[in-house]
Image (spheres, rainbow, N blue to C red):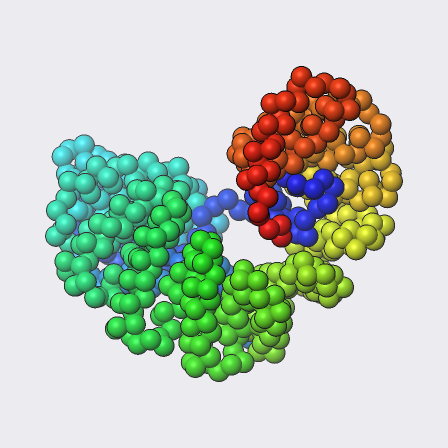
Length: 567
């Protein structure tokens, strides 16, 4: 929710409410590409078709940019959690001749084939049949490593389908068995590691940490404390720890993984890139920009020595380094790093011009340039994004609308509200045609248009748009949601200039205050700003009896924030 009414941020998708700008275009399924097929050696009878079971899944631990070759020689990037496959990470002894292993191999191969060919319902039927078979075995008293390993495979299959509800139910069954097994059971380390990964996907990070801790203990007992087989569960555990606010332990865990890799593969090994990036991102989040800079600098150095200074991987690493320099306040160095990164990416043809990595880099640099008052340079980058997207993806693509809105916001900041209005109406036209007039994502450019019209002194039009935004958001997010509060805040400013009753404005502001208190906390800066507005109108109305408590509260908050630097 904006603390200064009617001044939208540069990128509309950066609201503190973290609402996705184009949810209707985004899949809610777990990304299927994160699974690599490898086989677990288990021995039991499985009631299913011959050749229909597969144990698979690499545990993914730290987000990074993974790049795949296109047919034209360029690459396309995909952000996901990277690690080696099960064989690479665990090297558990596998019995290639095991009948059950072949069944495991067959099941997931079949599930993958069905998903790839669009037969997801058939894949679900197959997984359900196998789950029922294991359930019957467990009801008959069979609760060993074979059962939990089979459930593990089935759960991973549902992960590939994006059915997290089914995954949660299967994990409950797995816990019944895994909790009673000894740590020296064959394959238990890989099973509990998979459980840690799945719990993370479900957002159950405390349970994820417990699973990863057990996996680390099991693998340490088998391979020793300095084995590279520990790296995957360590990275998974570190990420989960970071998600629950245990940053100190997460940092130590990342450092442990880095130390293992340095000792076994050398200080310039490419395998260090993933943990170094993850550690750097965590340190930025914790406000330790200097420590983070060291991690990203190492990544740049590793890629430069391996591939040369003009390789696209160096460009991606430089963009991360630019981010941390920005966090440190080294603005000119950050701008230089971003520009160099973009030039390397373009010259090397490492990824396509319309790739999401390139797009994100342009937008980040554009935003930084606007912040430091170089809006014309920033706007050139936004126009470049718009033109590339139009050429490569067309005018109906979600990215095209995003760029229209970002460019409109840039023009608003330079007070060219007429051009902002033109771009926003174009964006709304596309969205109305593709999504319908009441889709919640339309409310975001609609609110920006209300701001532009307000600044063009077309208050009646602005008011109607703000009212429409509130109606759409109340239906989509709830009457007390942050997106509704944001729109109400803008409506107050519009109606104030229209000369509406001060008492009505106070009522709206009190509603905004309640929403902010719930969403941001009673001592947030947003609350402080809204308190000032309420007190202003109460003073105009002469309602002194209501002012005392609010004035005292505001004084406390002002004292709290008076030494804070506004960025």
